Image (cartoon, rainbow, N blue to C red):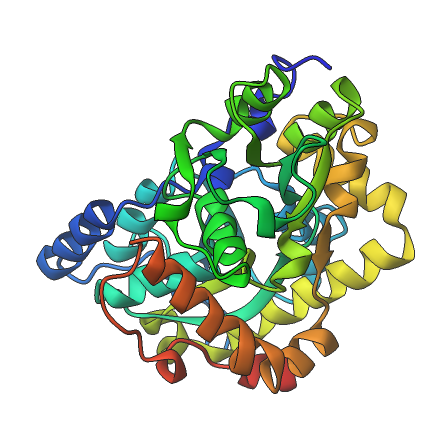
Length: 342
């Protein structure tokens, strides 16, 4: 598998999600010192305003490309400028300063931003990573209950970090029970194959590559074992929400229609997304299969059930254990579900 060719997807920091608390704190200082400028621009009377959407080329955000390609955004009367940002820290800073007024972020990232005082609301669940993030092991480790004393490769402050803490918690273990081996997720599987470590936590496309290179490897824990822990959401600024709720509604509707199109013509939609993230659709097949996109009806169900009752508390607890959150977050103030139920 050509790893160089995979750089546009696998090399992007979005999946690494390196969200040191210091970076979010810096964004909070920027928020406190900014003049309150906003990327929103007024449309016609009673019309929508322009949206600057902070994003990165991760397939979980791909339905925005579908909505753009299929003319869904235009049909719904919303002007969206996709702003590609290199790191999550850049995205947070741009959001806090008003350079963008919407962003694709991980659920736990939204919590970190909220903790730092950034004015935002989650208005849409975009995706859950089910098997696209996983803990891999060789034949000597068959379950997470056997992690004690083992060398575990993972990327600190990342989705891999969250998955590791969730697995340890489920096995009634702590970080002191294992031998942590911090490294980039892109290197973790290679370390496992070369037997430098006993277990590796990584994500697609590295999972598929590892399983192809060593048939003795197998997943022993994945995102599906902690549903929603590794998930993505659309956040909008408080200003956009108050200035133009119709714009927010148009965004949510557009995502829902894009997912509907994805489900009706999956091959074509995957082709659109793959092109935008700089990869061949066939090479991303396993990655796509490991991601669950949420349509509008599924959003409404999740917001009235599992996302609020299970996912948010789980993400908060695991992010706190991983040191990404330093204090409790008011989860009821984190989201606004009215747009998925309208």
